[in-house]
Length: 292
Image 1 (cartoon, rainbow, N blue to C red):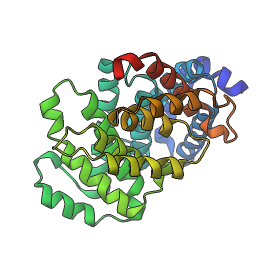
Image 2: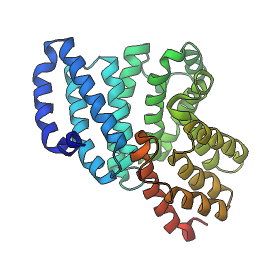
Image 3: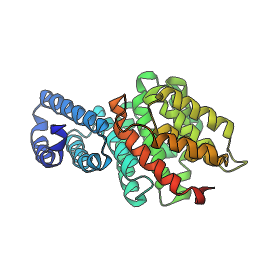
């Protein structure tokens, strides 16, 4: 953890160096990419969300620096979507909507550029929905990361967009991507697409798409694919499915189980995710009188 403890002080210097040296060649880029992968892994294993929060911000600057020097590199654009989406989802979603919007907007900018470079997609919002679905049918399992991370950023952008009507118009395009992902690889990111649909079917208005049977089915699939040590799917299951069912007992017991999970996870790559899940579980339990 010594590397992580030095993260905040060293990385701004590293960012400056990267901006200067990246144009020199692919070998440098590969070296930098490997270092970023190591830092990402260290963050995932961190049990202290505050330390991870402080260290992750300059990490985003490093990613921006790499993309600035190679703006059409699809691998770097994918990293940009992943980094901004993960940071915004972990540290701003639900607590700072204005900041979350800015971060997800940046993630979506990288994601749309990624789709343009990879697939030649331009002006997606002007595309007829049937044509959009036909375009998605041409995508294969190799395209799953590019599809998922951009669609995930897009869905999150919709949830925090200040102009709800404008953002909601995009939702059918996102749903189409997620449906295609279900058929291509439902296991990607430990079943994250099932979390999307579990939430989606729970929050739709009655008579306009709400389907709690489907919601429960997707949440069950997500928890199964994520495994018994992953706590975040359980938090979302309680927050959206249990609340939509007005099942206060299920809500309470699920979140209490999350709070009782060990801080040192048997799978250390889940340490940070689980720490954040416990924070959210505590918050939701404190809000139980308002939620039910």
